[in-house]
Image 1: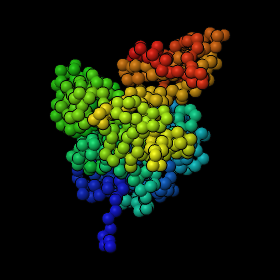
Image 2 (image 1 turned 180 degrees about the vertical axis):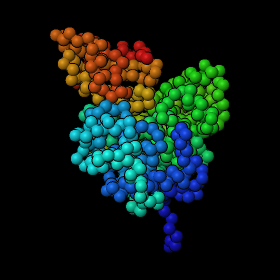
Image 3 (image 1 turned 180 degrees about the horizontal axis):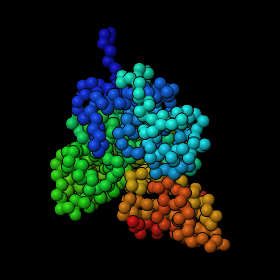
Image 4 (image 1 turned 30 degrees about the horizontal axis):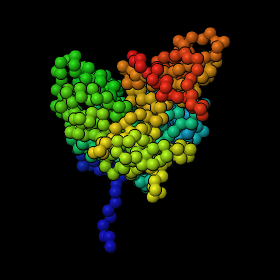
Amino acid sequence: MQIFESNSPLLPEIFSLHGKWRAQQEAVICGRERLTWAQFIAGNHRLANGLLARGVNPRDAVGVVMSNGVPMLQAMMGLMAMGAVSVPINLSVNDDGLVSMLNDAGVTALIVSADQRARIESLIPSMPKSLKLMVCDQGADDDWVSFEQLVATAGEQLPKVGIEATDRLNIIYSSGTTGLPKGIVHTQGGRRDWAYDLAIALRYHCNSKTLLTIGLYSNISWVAMLTTLLAGGTLVIAKKFEANAFLDIVQDEKITHTAMVPIQFQRVIECLEKSKNEYDLGSLDAMMSCGSPLHAELKQSIFDYMPCGIIELYGLTEGVITTIEPEQSEGRWSSVGKPLIGTDIRIVDDNDVQMAANQSGEIVSRGRITMPGYLNRPDANAEASYTDEDGKVWLRTGDIGYFDDEGFIYIVDRKKDMILTGGQNVYPQDIEAVMFEHPAVNDVAVIAAPSNRWGETPIAIVVCDEKSAATMNEITKWSNQRLGKQQRIAAAIAVNELPRNPNGKILKRELKKVHSVVSYD
């Protein structure tokens, strides 16, 4: 017998209750703009109700092409509150990639910041036929609705739209400037569970004050956003990252949490070294590093300069996560820890046989935080699936690793040859597809090389048409004009042929041995 209703509220309801019970506590800070929880939630709900009144429906996909700021945060939270599916776009992607992603998602509306409006207007002819509403945070005309117009008569109540846990919440694209994009789907229930589990692992609480320094489209930012908001804390948004500004904000705002990529931490440590550690960083409770490996020397420097140490997170947007606690790092500087609570991990060989401790193989994972699948990509879903002896399906990571005798996990290599530059995923095949369009390029392989600035950077190993007079500098310039900002190659290197196995597959590991010894700025 059940007398009382006992449901598990989704994030829109949880956040709405924070607006009620934490009304006067600060929820968001960006520069001089400061919003209480009551103001933040009221604004989110007005946006949601305004979109509903303009014909955007629950479960519709809505593209978000915006720079960091309160408007972008409220756009994504407003879409969540009305049960729509946000599709946040990495602003560094090139125009072809942006159009490809929005078409793949089938967006019915676009929300853009004023600095992105001209770019979007130039691409209107290529936008999906489903597009029926364009919203800009500032300014309005016959084609655009402003935020001010959108919320003018909208109510502040949480929309009653019947959101289900299995409804899509967002789609985050991991690649797609050329060819088929890979949209990673997250659900309302999945994101809630993900935030709960991460909040425990990353030590969030109701007094957390979290500094966001990466684009809000990034899943790294979503980690920090949702865990902080779930706990009822405060978000501090930086419009861009600068190491000195980071330290000033931490000191002045008494920041407790942040999530960044290793190259950002490296810049912060360099600033601390130059300043002779003059900053007061005592407010920091926990910091997370993810996106690329945190090398042992840098990790130890973080512990030397920052009293809270660092929690290193290994994970995929698709839904596998491990973390290593600061207290566990001594003597395990290269480890990425153990699986997130409720998540299981196996190591399997090329024949899908489970490996014992200290044996390297592909990392596979399963748990409640795993995505339901890629959007419109049954081929990618099949490729990413591993089925165990009990018929349970696990997510293949494409990464090679092992666990030691105590169960601590170590990453050995990236099976998929993905390049992690500045914490962003860059896929060599996307760059190669562009470079093959150059008339002088007969063959090309893109690999990662060390970068003093970005951690890794793409370089291209090129086989040219023997009749071509094109130089490597010319090919580099031509390619970078057509690539997204983070895809741009640091160099093109001429060779007579590329090494291949008997099946014709390029042996990138051999190329890396020869060409990845030089570091680029």
